[in-house]
Length: 139
Image (cartoon, rainbow, N blue to C red):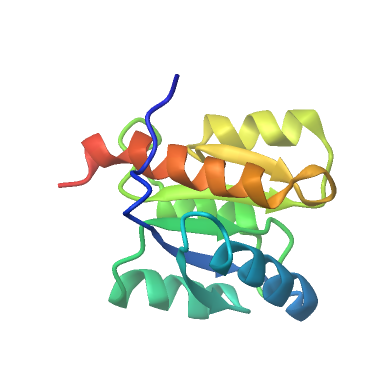
């Protein structure tokens, strides 16, 4: 069993998603989750990376297909050393390519979920596990 955040603690989650409908619906799901995460939103990669620099973000929920940049490039920017990540990243994508999911995990994401197959509970659990798994590497 993987440890999770205590029910009393919630994570500050940054969702980087360029589709306004997806951004709003997944943000609402996270805000209403059992963990009551604080959700920050960014519709562009640049805005998301700026928020990461200036806010205390526990976990980034990242779409791979962005208009202004590749989500994969963002992943590599957020986690330059995959063996010692400083921030938790959960990829949430509509792409169903298993080799892509494996590649994302290899490069440091703690989880890769497919939007069409992911429930609110799945996403909440992925965030909690991701934050806990990165905690030993955060100084």
